[in-house]
Length: 364
Length: 186
Image (cartoon, rainbow over all chains, first blue to last red):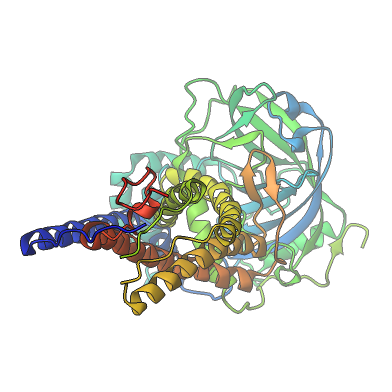
């Protein structure tokens, strides 16, 4: 078919129409820029967060920007079935689940000297039989020092070691605690907890709240901990150590004698228990469920390809475990992703922690 | 002047469905990577299934395009404009294939589980390789900006056709039936 050419536009009409097109394109572009944060320089982004870790710790290519000094673990989780009434996650069916994980010190310096006062961490990746995964990172303090991403962003700077003294600037710490009274209370609770002597006899706490979802869809707020079967022994914080890896070396020597075990203890929250605030412990009388036993069978160095290139993102959860409204969970996931992206693209340097051979430990 | 017929109803449905999804994905993408707020985890969890939906839809759309070629561009359009239109359309198609595949590939190379919903995961399509994961992650960002720029050019050109040239190109993709004389009377 044919159609007649449209009547020509008057110059004014042409200009108006061009202006409308320009305006539409401008609005779309501006909305995109706004969404991406380019119009909000004050927005706390995962990139800024990771930059701050690097500013405080220095940049060590190939290493994690936090929990930089570590060692991989291989083991199993034996579920006793007690968790199945709370969560439909396959990991809580009775049975054995293979896992890998990592012991580490908090902080972004991979060659820092071992010290019992430094926060210790255990990260685990459970591989479920249906292909799902559960990744969790836990630390050996009873509460987290902050309850928001902004709080952690400020804390990193406030507790940065002064190059002159090697210690944080007391005035900066005081100013931070003035703005964040919740952190003052949390740090007091952290300081009051006796320190375990090693990696093997420390309790590792998930701290952030999650939700267990059962087969009927019922949701229970939970927090979890890995509680050691190895007896507690208080750390000697006075002794002078010549071996800068002495806590890792003690762990490596310990596992040569046999596997290490922890109970996975799930604490059930009651209505009103804080799920958005990792600085607050839940009341001590909350029901605790022992859902199974973690057995660490072997330790392997970071260069062996077991855990180094794994991001222990706490939002990687199987069906049956869900995020809570704790704002730290999204922040951890977002910042870990940037840290992973950076170190993944860098040439790897050897870890400070040396294992005598691949696969030391039980039965080797 | 040659008349300009509309795309088939199915072609228009695919176009508009994908337009919404692709634009949403671009905004979700830049929104999530610049946020540490609670919406981050939610946005990441919907970014993956929408990406896979786009991958499936673009495959259907490519077959549909080969079976139902688009109506010809007006004969009076300058050759460079016709070439630009053709090229930008193939860039859009290529990116609609590449972006989900690179996203899937970078998660595979980083060994993240690729959760669509609930306990439904996709298998990895690449070996566990951190360096490759980092490179694909960067490529995903660059191509996202290229896709957004190409989308803006596409939108601008469509508006030029609709408001200035009024040559039936704009109405050929409108969800409604074009008025007689606009070129729909086939």
